[in-house]
Length: 250
Length: 246
Image (cartoon, rainbow over all chains, first blue to last red; front, side, top):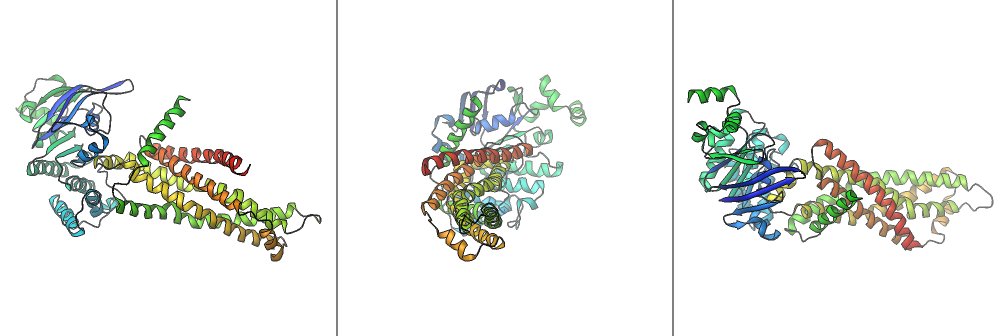
């Protein structure tokens, strides 16, 4: 599990995260929701040290990430899989090379073992036989699936996803959501998904945090979300006509 | 001034990360081979073409300016040789490489930054600065001197061809090339080139690595890399010449 306590973050005069505390549970899909610019991506980047925090604590299974040395931080990061908004695949590497890259960097496995692991991960994301394709030849959904395969190739303990459905059609988005949830259960990992896609929230939201103007405004699960009286949350969740009707039907 | 100090601080922090032991030597060797090709081999044809024609023009211009019965015709070979070795090959070719290689390094790293590929490396627990920049710096430092030596050789062939068209005989030209040759000038040129290679690769990498924004920011990083590298090359050309030759 990942626990954050009293996180504060400023960019110049802009107070982006205000006293944020939360527990992201293991074996659950933890969702961070909020409007664009509410601080979701900053929170994810703060968790993994891509942005330095002004104050507060980030604990990975009890280990204070910011209190350990850079070398140990790098070792800890090897236990984190991250799915970026655009996939962040290395465009000069093929699908196979992209997924194999962490194995080449950090393991002593033989070529056959590495290839087996790559093929297993590709099968897991339903992209068998696509080893030789280059990132430029992939569709948006395929790019996300290859990025998931790369994120899980080292069998991470933590999986962080930054807007995994951005730019995807609703059908592909559901495939990606289900894949993330299946992987979370299968490997019993701590998964954090940062999204503003309400379909995702209804599909996989087990432990939901609503961030508004850099503060945690609401916490709960998807059933509690539908029955909440929190005005800001309702304005965000039920912004579309479809979800308004869903709320009324409830 | 504050901005300059800010950039200098970030540059040295980046260089502190760059100069560290590679995490995986076999991958580092592959990256280095790739960079040798990108930074060095891909510039050979440009260096050859430029050096040949500039050599020819230097020789023709020298012969026109020395068209006097009081001046021996072998001076054309001598003047072309010294111009090429002392200034054209190390400094002018480095300025051109700052445009070609520098912009390529800055835009490559800038694109990687804005598409979060650098963040992805960091998340995997890789020292991204060392992984991406160190092979480029080493490739430039090792390969640029070879490019400059090629430039000197081809430039002299160009000067000979130019001399022929200006009625300088091969014998006169060759005599001028060998006349009071100072081998230290070649060492001086190589020392300068190593400095320039370091400036081009690290300054361009700095601007690319610290790109913030989108496509326009990548373009800006590339322009800043070329402009700053060029100014620093000219500044260090003056400083190094003063120190080494004075």
